[in-house]
Length: 66
Image 1: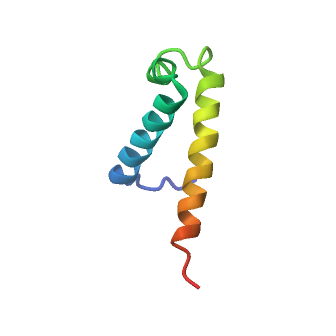
Image 2: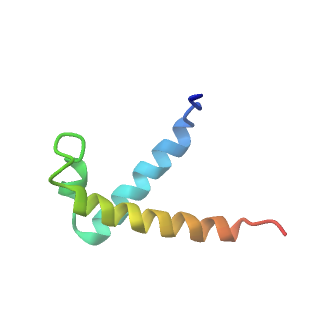
Image 3: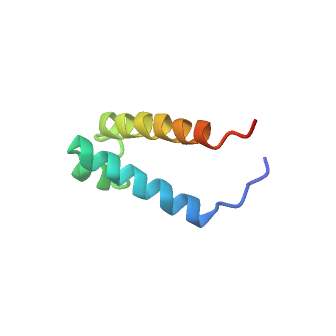
């Protein structure tokens, strides 16, 4: 499997989006501790990931050429 280079700007933007959504949900503490205790925070991070997916898909629709 070929590893793709990670765009640092995209990675930073996704992290900012993750914390913005976590703040809206009131679960910033749970999201910050994901790296140290992922099992205990799977519900909170799952919710954030779902919302991130929806928001990024909405943005993709805005930039569709055609």
